[in-house]
Length: 296
Image (cartoon, rainbow, N blue to C red; front, top):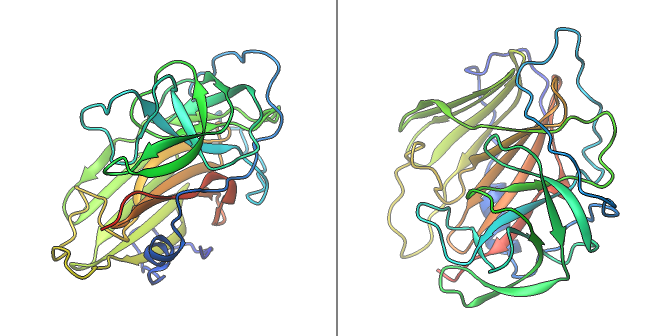
C-alpha cells in the first residue's frame, strides 16, 4: 500500500494503484492463514470500554507502530448463518468468533471490540481447530475459536495483551452519509472516507483525517472467464477487486484510526487494515488476512 502526504481535499485528484488486491486474492489465497500473535493473554476479565466520539480539544493522537502486533482480526461465528450476514462469516457452534490461521494466541481471556460501535467484550481463546468454511462448506479453515457473548455479523478486533496503558480503543458505527451507485461517503469523528465510481470497472478511494487527504488509490475490478459482466455499483459493494469499507476503530479518542477494508474475489476474500494518521496511512500487517472461500 502506498502512503501519501498531501493537502488536497478528499475530492481531489486520485492516484492510480493498479490491481494489487485482486492479484493477491487470485494467487495468494490459501485455506490456512498465518496471523501474527497477540501476545500473552490477560489474567482476568477486562472491564467494558465505552465508545469515545468527540476527543477533548487538547487531546493528541497516540503513537502507534504499524509494524508491531496491534492484535488480530476475527470473523464472527454462528451455529447457523444469520439472515443478511456477510458471505464471509464463519459457522462454528459454541464460538462467538474465530481467528483464522495458526496464530500464537494462547488460551486465556482477551479484550475485543466488535465492529459497528459496540463496547468491549471478553473472549476466551481455545485451542486451534479446523472448521468447514466457504460457499459449499467443503473448504477446511484452521481457526482459533473465541468463546464469549454473541456478536452481530461483523469483524471483531481482538486487542493485544496487555493493552498499552495509553490506549482507549473504541469501535465506531459505520453509517454512510452518502450511499449512491457512483459515490459512498462515511464520516467518523475527524475521519472521512469517500469512494467514487470512475467507470464500469474502476473506483477511487480517498481517506482524510482532520480535513487533510492522507490516502488515495484507484482499484480495478477484474473479470474471470465465464463470469457476468461488471458494472460497478458502490452502494451494493463487494465487486471482485474493489475494496469495501468494513469497519472503523480508533486507538484513542484523538486517533489514530484503523480502517478495515474487505476485498472480495471470485474464490476468496481479503481483509486489510490501514492505520490513518494526520500525515499518511500505513498497512497494519497483524490486522489482515486472506481466506479461500470456494472455487469459481
